[in-house]
Image (cartoon, rainbow, N blue to C red; front, side, top):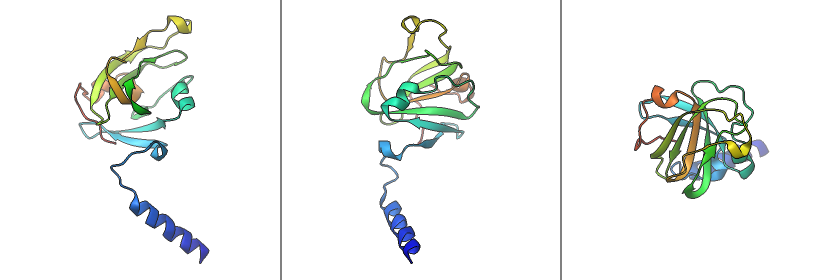
Amino acid sequence: MRAATTVLTLLVLASCHDPNTVTLEDYNTRDIAMPGGEVVHAEVASTQPQVEKGLMFRTSLAPGRGMLFVFSHEAVQPFWMYQTLIPLDIIWMDANRKIQAMAKDAQPCKTEASQCPTFGGQQPSLFVLEVPAGSIAKYHLKLGDVLRF
């Protein structure tokens, strides 16, 4: 009986959740639909330690995979490739998930942190998506496209 009550409570709580309302607590992984219908399966970084680590030290990132950075408010969000071992495409989006900026084929920085270039950060963004290099071309992404998640 106790298990049935727990299941029923969870079902009621789940039905109360508005699927259009996204909070930081909702994230762990998220499927992101590209404009052409393809889906990228993204790990989500929403806490400061997760954001700071990002994809650092990873030796690979499979096609169709990525990392979605979720910030608490829209702001300029420059990224760099220090300690990142794989080339990436980086996509900045506003609160409406509209692409504001993109960096193609950002290369790993193999020098001192102070020497690493930064990417993006010219437009306020709430979300940033890192995907394997070549993904912007693969998904035919352009400024103004809207990603769905």
